[in-house]
Amino acid sequence: MGRAHEVRKESIAKTAAKKSKLYARYGKEIYQVAKGSPNPEVNLELKRIIELARKDQVPKEIIERAIEKAKGGVDENYIPTRYEFLGPGNSNFIVECLTDNPARTIANVRNCFTKTGGKSGSVLHLFEQKAIFSFSGVSEEELLELFIENDLDDVDFEYEEGFITVLVEPLKYYEVKQLLVNRFNDLEFEIDEIRWLPLSYQELNKTDYQSFLTLLELLDDDEDVVRVYYNVSKQN
Image (cartoon, rainbow, N blue to C red; front, top):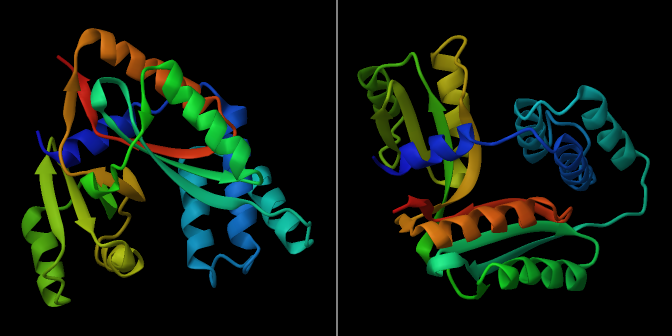
């Protein structure tokens, strides 16, 4: 299986068990992005985050409350931070946070890795950032025709298990999404996001895999952690 399969598997496995933390994270992220412009039709990054929130079933009132908070000029400022770590079995992690206290956040994140046998390490070069769209109901031929018509020769796509997954440079996220929506009526995206993709995946032994699962739980409990990317596929 290719990288597209791993991305889809990880996305489908997301749990809604900790709704309150999920809502709080999206509320903070929407507020921070909306401070520049609270209109999602003008602020395309805000529009993207709102669409992600809706896909994760964040209630409408939480989204609206965060936007109204930004409009009201509340004096809160969250700083986006990104950390690189080696996890269990020398797996690779990128942890993205939104925080009002970077010193607190890095200490907490580092503690999560220390508890599970990890440590700081340079791993960003082992990932690449991509915009990803995954959907069904479209043939490879139809998709190729669309990209050729619009001179998009740097778009990759894979077909697996009835789904097409499109990978494109982040700067072309909005262009490609609009082309897909305009060409294919009622297209529903299973995945629609910008994320860090590992260049290769790593399998862990049973002990390291259990530590990996524990690490994910610890990071999920940290209110400053927004997204976690890693190169772990499964255990041996």
